Length: 485
Image (cartoon, rainbow, N blue to C red; front, side, top):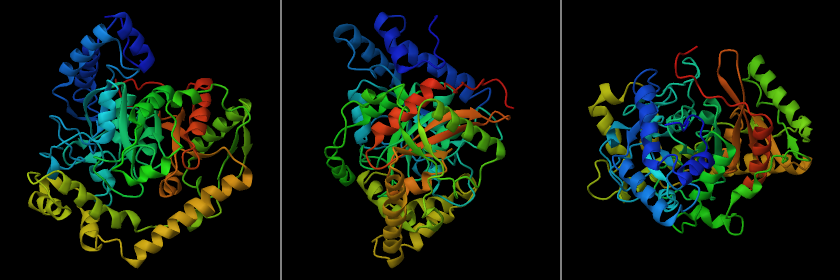
């Protein structure tokens, strides 16, 4: 077969499917072959946790539908991997990487998975992830789970994968799927997207449904697209859209959601854009090499017509510290999720999971479960703790009103620009959107990206800027999958 699957985009695959050059069944088989050769042997990057046993049947059905009725849309017959905390009402598990949930089946699809199926996407499998979205303990490596083991970075074995959507990012980077879905509470799309040299869109909390996703935080969680190109990420975003009355956060999006975000893909989108760079605090962990990559990216944006306000400081950046919000929200959110799985679910509460881990310490407690214990025994689950209430109000004040909002208003900005994912802490607490885009590689081959961020529901602006940068400076390259540096 002459079709080249490596770095193939949704549009390229769709054209090949339309002409009969390939079928969706053949496409799934090509991805499965790459997974067999490089994910489960060879480099063993370990990004794929589970394959959908029905994937080929679904592909064949969609091939037949294409022949008889034509495609439903761009995602018809396109293989997608899901982070393992997203429910599928099929023959796959949803475990969040935990052995305690290794036998857990969801009774129905998450809302966004129903939307993907309606769009004709093939749910090919589940991706490995940092266990419980990196909320199990302290010191656990990103990309590690007791059920799935350690995900490795295909660009450099000494470079972390980032967490917690590690498998989703690595699978896309390695061309084990066309696109994937990750989730983020605080950097879990942006961080692995940056370290995997891919596009990651962390949407505004409320743009897409969270129903049917194993939760971490009731105020910060969101799913989002992960892809090799901005266009593919936007096509996936389009498919995830839909108003879910069960998700209270979606009540904030009325009149702010666009039916088709591809209309904002503009190769000249940086012309006249005002982009601010908050240098204080956010650049302290950069190496000299990373700083040089970032500054080179800024120079290219200037060349493409952007007005760069440098610095455009966020005056509250150093006031934003540890917050008890996620710790307090985890137990209640998780227990509510587990209760909805029904009486036959293997685990009904967070305490059940803790007890399971205590009973199987060799398999489950390689790094301990200190955070799970804190959530179970130091929080009431009622959100009445004074510290929680104060922290929630403080986060909103420092991150939104006096933080991002104030800076963007003062400098009349279209977006903020952060190195890598270093702005995730403030943007996630604000519930604001971001897009990470590859911008280069270090001498050791480690990927480095830049992140565009803005205010609630300003995804159109971010898409325009990210697409213009990508199209004029195509930096991404696929990992060799032959040897580590």
